[in-house]
Length: 177
Image 1 (spheres, rainbow, N blue to C red):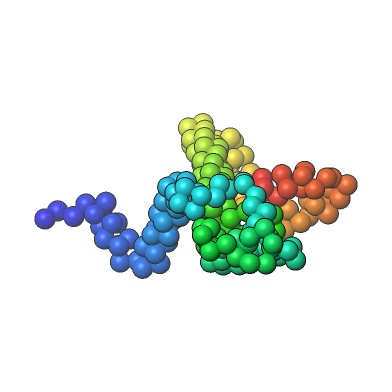
Image 2: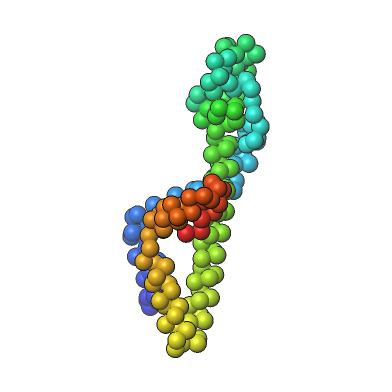
C-alpha cells in the first residue's frame, strides 16, 4: 500500500489528542451556534431578546439555574411554567438561549476576521512572491514589524495616546490590532 502525504498527515493528526479535542470542541461549538440556538429558543419558548418580568423576584433578583419564573406576587414560583435552564439575567432574559446566540455572533466575528486576515495575507504574499525584488523586501519588513508588537500592548499604547477618543472608537482600535 502506497502512503501519500495526505494519509500520513491524517494519521499523525488522529494521534494528536489535543488537536482532536480542539477539533471536537470547535465542531460542537459550530453545531450549538447554528442548530442549537434556534432549537433552544423553540424548546424553552424563550426568544433571545424577550424580557420576562416574571423571571425577576420582587426583590429585583433574577431567577437562578433550573428555576421556574414567579407568579405575579414575585415570591411563589409558577410550577406550570417552563424552567430557565441557566437562569435569567437582570433584565429577565433566558441565559441559555442568549449564550447560544452569543456563540453564533462570536463565530461569525472569528471566521470573518480570520478570512479577512487570510485574504490580505495571501494577497500580499502572492504579490511579493510574484514581483520579488524590493517589493518582496518591503512586504517582508512590514510583516516582521507588525509581528514584533504584541497586540495587547499595542492596544494599550494606542488607548493611552488616544486618551481623548470615545469608548466606541477604542473598541474599534482594540478589535483591529
